[in-house]
Length: 146
Image (cartoon, rainbow, N blue to C red; front, side, top):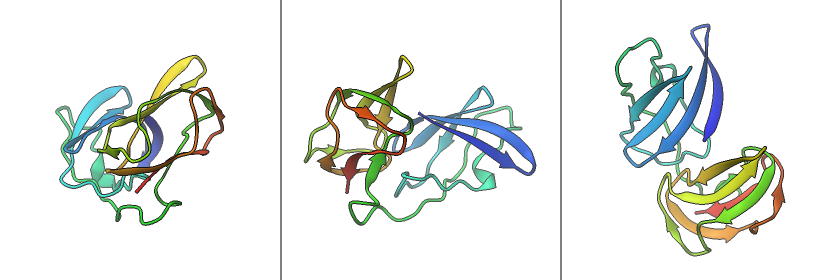
């Protein structure tokens, strides 16, 4: 899960990306869950969200398009990095595995909470840079997917 503090038209929102599939993104906006329909995902390494991506004032489910960029082209661009410091509890993939957007890659324990780190784009696991039990830092490279 990824947490963002967004300011849209002068209003602040806490947005947590809870789940990403090939067709939807489940987000929590200020404590209210919304399902965003995605027409096309090319690269979710760094989500590019326009103001139209979230309409927190709506009461019903949220439906929008998500702007994206091209898929990663090299090892540096294809890195999944640690969103926070912690310890690797479990690796769920191996080098050479094909992965889909939202597929579980590993479990990261931080502050006694288990965080499931998922694939942010589809591809092949080229390199796993950590092992189970390793301590990792914020933004440390964990897995390369190309």
